[in-house]
Length: 262
Image (cartoon, rainbow, N blue to C red):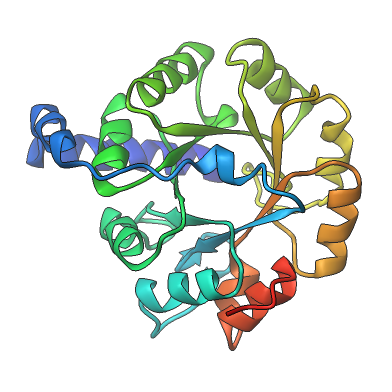
């Protein structure tokens, strides 16, 4: 069983547990108190390459990434450092996140927020909206075509943007032909074994039609990499571990974003 398969299996267990604790009807009722959305996809259309800065406590490949800093500390540093949007990793067993991290980020920052998790069930889409997400991630490698389409439809109904993540040409074809995805995330990390190859973005980009927003994910550490991606037409990058490990996440984010700060 691959790392991705294991994560999906434990995610099913965790979703079932949360559903027993908080039935879907309660989430539906809570949507009435949902605040104003912050358009995620729209933010990626600004001039220059956008930086989506991620809060990520740990990962299966490297273990603990950062201890001792609150979500508020991190996301406010990212905002000061010129991030365009936030990604909040909420998967618990393997990445140490939770929905409280998303709620805290929502309260602490004005930036649009992507809920980064392994979405497998419509219940999670409702969770995301209630907790304050502006967008969700759908990983093509984790889902069949029918489930992908179902989750995308639920997100559209709840006014959530969708980032469709792919790693190879077959997955990209599904994202384009089945979902007609507006925002494509090209993950340079292979979720089967967690190896990283930034060349993956360059390989797949040529098959992405004009008019789609493209995010390059994983393996990005330096502004020079972002400049090269911008030259070939990438709209945004998603960076987590590099920023979370930095002595000063604000300075590290500013170095990537090219922001002068404020």
